[in-house]
Length: 384
Image (tube, rainbow, N blue to C red; front, side):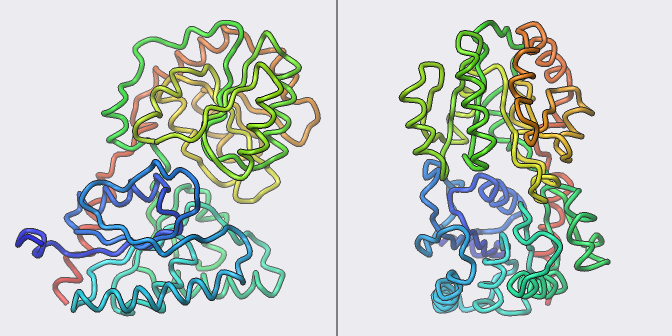
């Protein structure tokens, strides 16, 4: 380690998914804020192409599965003991700990010094209200303790504050940072915005891009596209628990295509150049879906690609406000079929022009309001 590195404050990041691009963007912000960074995290078997920025040491805690929260506890305790032992080589506590989600905040509580400032980030609400079951109530109590302890809470949608966190802690807004899932600045430099709107023609190419979940929404899409053979094609780019089912469906339908997983930093521009419409319809009976702002809100319009989203969501409010897509009700039978009867290349061209006419600040992260906060935390720690 060089003398220059020694002088920098050290930050520890705890990630439940080492391949998650959002975590990589936060790591880049911490580097920009002047930290040297150590990352501990789990592998999930998805999007292994995505990597942390150069110069960051990542240490795998092994594989962990989604759901089955109680079953994960022994694994979390084992990971905490490993980190506690590994951290002894540094002889002093880090200046900052950045934990994504409840699992990693629990590991932080067991493995790290309680005096180190904690930034706690939530990208999705995993324990929605009302908290009625025993496990749900236990999780909520734990969340309240973490909210009280953390120096900053980071959320990716402003709707999460009144919709969830203020119900756990009325004062939480005072120490909350909203960092929306916008396109990384590095990706914006790598992939310049198109100069002209999409010139869509039949067959219109619908893209389903990202992590494949919400089976009913994806199945409805596949069935609707197959019925509109000749007018529409469906292109899947990504990974997730529905990958096998999608791949099998694509084998038997000549207007459905599965292109595999992709690298967020290397492939994003090419993918959006290849589609005319981005399908971002999730199950709007899920409280998290109703409040969340996914990265697709920013990626598609940045590249001039209109969106299809679910009604009764904060995402739908943004899409209507900006005039960059369509809103359907996934709970209504044949709602997608009706929309596809109305979509024309001309409409898509107009929506694409609207999206490209918006300032890129709507879609690309800035960091100017966030990085100084991270810097200040490190400085305050070094003065103690």
